[in-house]
Length: 253
Image (cartoon, one colour):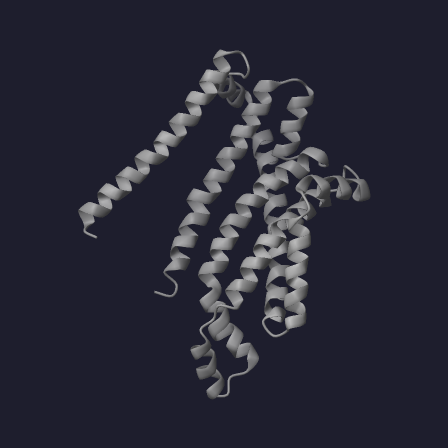
């Protein structure tokens, strides 16, 4: 593919993204024209009226819950994935655990954990994120750690490598692109799930502010905090996670 063709492809891709944003904006304006929702102007005014310190505090709370919960699920997945690589028993356990957790909704986890730990506990949002992201991350991790080149493994064993050498020299490096891709999806999911958990049992965070605005019949507040969440998810994905994934895909090139 020539540079001109790549340029045209990139331009068409960018235009397509702009059209998607314009399409959603038209739907929003149309809904607000019927009186169903506050319009974009009202929401922008509400956003401009927010105190920066409050906005920053709530966004930071949601980021903390999301990243901490995802990190917990990632560490569990890495441990189970490493053991599963050597044990069919743990492989079966991991697969069944993933299926069970995948069949349980974020709503159920939120209600159960809030009932057990209390509304004011900081743990329910973190644990809900960990429980909901675990199936995806665990499945991806087990698959990634099982995708190492058998030829490379045989070669490194032939020179007397230890199991730890196999893992750190062959298995883990070859798994990096898949693990990063899974992490990108998992973190995006974590942010959205964290908001659900915060709405049911938290004293702060974007989700808490959305449900608080809803309880006060403040439709502009609901949409404003929803816009904050969308901007947070898109910003994290496009500015941080996507470039990291792009670099990871070049890891093995």
